[in-house]
Image 1 (cartoon, each protein chain N blue to C red):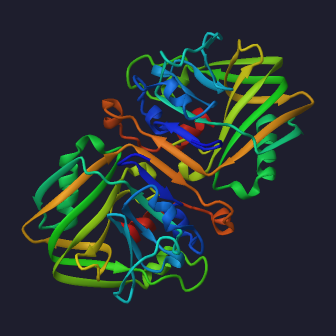
Image 2 (image 1 turned 45 degrees about the horizontal axis):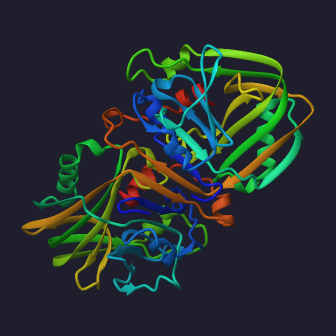
Image 3 (image 1 turned 30 degrees about the vertical axis):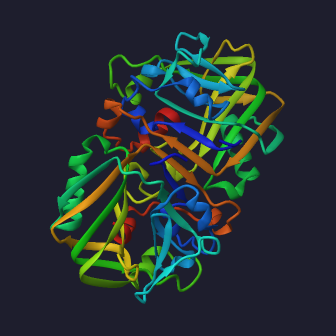
Amino acid sequence: MAANEVYQYSLISALMDGVASSGIPISQVLRHGDHGLGTFQNMVGEMIVLDGEVYQMKADGSVVHVDPETTITPFATVTKFSPATTVRATLQDGKKDLQALLDNLHPEATNHFLAIRLDARFKRIEFRTAGGQCRPREGMVDVCSRQTTHTFEGERGTVVGFRCPGYVMGINVAGDHLHFISEDRERGGHILGFETEGEVEVGVAVMSKFHLDLPEGDKEFDEAKLVKDEEGIKAVEG
Amino acid sequence: MAANEVYQYSLISALMDGVASSGIPISQVLRHGDHGLGTFQNMVGEMIVLDGEVYQMKADGSVVHVDPETTITPFATVTKFSPATTVRATLQDGKKDLQALLDNLHPEATNHFLAIRLDARFKRIEFRTAGGQCRPREGMVDVCSRQTTHTFEGERGTVVGFRCPGYVMGINVAGDHLHFISEDRERGGHILGFETEGEVEVGVAVMSKFHLDLPEGDKEFDEAKLVKDEEGIKAVEG
């Protein structure tokens, strides 16, 4: 795969349906990208892939630097990130201002994918980490009902994210999906809200190639109903 | 791309929205597959790709053997077809019996893609051909409201098709999508119904890799609303 193509393993609908007990080694995902997000076996923690390194951000607040050969993912989205546009911006109302910035930077790309990287000092950042399934096939809405939220102030760090077009809802998350990791790689999770301090650097790439790998020989996946729960996805991943 | 991976250019929702005035040379599509279906610039006719050859099946009943270097497609789906299962079957109630056969052959593959090839003598085969847009951006429902239908009896020929999982509705057509071409390559189109004579050979491959290329620098595509018209897609492509 060339730079700025999307690679995805499995479906967000499969996670919603609790398909998370197996997957592929993360090393296999890294062949296709060095920048992205996802989750881990049994949805234990949030995954961020930053500059080719993989981190598991757990509900107890700890972050584990993951060995991609020995760790499995049931869902991940990555790209070989090469920002086509890099801008400096002030994002006081974090998610909303970032959304507006992306809209203005690439008004032509509503029907394409975007990869996003944001390096900043955060006046405030709020994120969640999912603790994992209590039982096999427990769906993501139930898993996230027990999520832990964390808020930090004055933290430096990086946001890795994707914007997906509306028509992939169910396959991935339509709209902006952002994960955060602190500069010291000791804190992070799925972003709920943020404010940045001063100007920040935002890198963006428009992507028009999407590669989807479905689980093979995975009974959980084969049996999943994969009903598109648009509201549920928005609630836990929006 | 290896055998039995799906390659798709653009979206069925884009066709529904009338995005068909440009596209990519078919030679570019053929790099990814030798078996498939699609349409042509301005939706003039139905496309079938059979053993690497491309045919344009037009509304006046004629079939053109297409030069892939000089012909453009705004939407196509192909695979390098290598049937994993080949069975002989009797399909008296054509589409319905084929559907049941596929369900029984691959009950585990509800959430995967199937590529299908059927070689048979048809007691009766009914297909349609779309004549093309009357104006730029005319949507597929309107184009197909003027479709020509043809019915033949005692015709030998080949069916090329795909079964797509429900979650790709809007990106492609959920369910079975079949095109037909006669053995003499002089007749064909999008299948509405059929009955086969005696036993027929059905080749099937389960596919778990899906590659989507979106139009680049295509103003029509960029501006398309891509509202998912599930009923409309079923009506014209089901």
